Image (cartoon, rainbow, N blue to C red; front, side):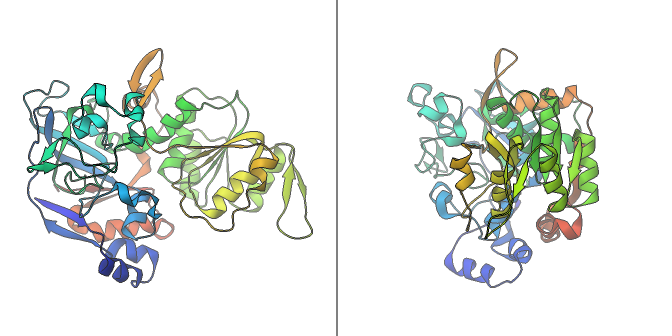
Length: 414
């Protein structure tokens, strides 16, 4: 089958780092079109899928540009076919599969849980036993399940594992525990968003806002705009202030439920002061604030400037929800963290939630909320590309200031 392949080697790293602009490194670095073997079902509880659509995520771009932190490197294995935001159709099932049928559309939970790795339920690690496989304790170990006659390689997710190709190829295989049927009432352009939308839904279900006090969302990508939608979809009725840079992002934030959209800088400062915060000027350094502030700040960027802003804009004893994949950040002043007794909560993926009195996977909750709301969530998908135009797709996703992209989607079978 045709697929995009990504490998991590020192020569490829040096070549990518010499490419110049970050956007070009992401598009022209160590990813290439390849002909790889069609994946085979490794066991009776597995299914083979054809990919209908696969999103390009910010973490994909960071990985391809060799700009990520080395902290997660031991929990990946390469070469791999990237892509973890996957909408697919079932084309073959093993004899023990009873969750899905051939012909169904499904979204794929890319997390490699103890179940996917082949361990019996009674042998599951504490994270998987608690319904939080995103922090599976066995991510750095080979699995019990055999892939082409050898144990499954280490890895956190499909798309970062050498044995299980991701969505940037024509086909993949997945364990039935990873598959979630998609309603016929959801268009492909909405269904492919279930994975990224599930991240803010997961964060909100685990740490809901405190009452209806004002909330700030920093960022204007799919996770940030998804957080605005998820806040409203899960019942939050307080004020939502969103920080965005471009007019079309601001318009979509408003359509998804934001009360006010501000640009970084003076507009954002004014919004903070409107909460009752008072500004003070140190002898050296930027302004600091006391009083007022936002009870919850969603940092959906994960840069040094966004983390610094979140620390400054949160009210005393407020919470910072870190959804952006912050890595190695320099020159961050953590004084507000302890001086105002802030909480910083990081959320990575999804798992088993308590929803309306039942245990449900985050994907199921997100799909239900999409069916219940009429917000224009599908407008998050702004660009579509065939697989052989992957360089254009990666450039559009990496340079959204120029392209206007919010979510870029690949269609491997077109």
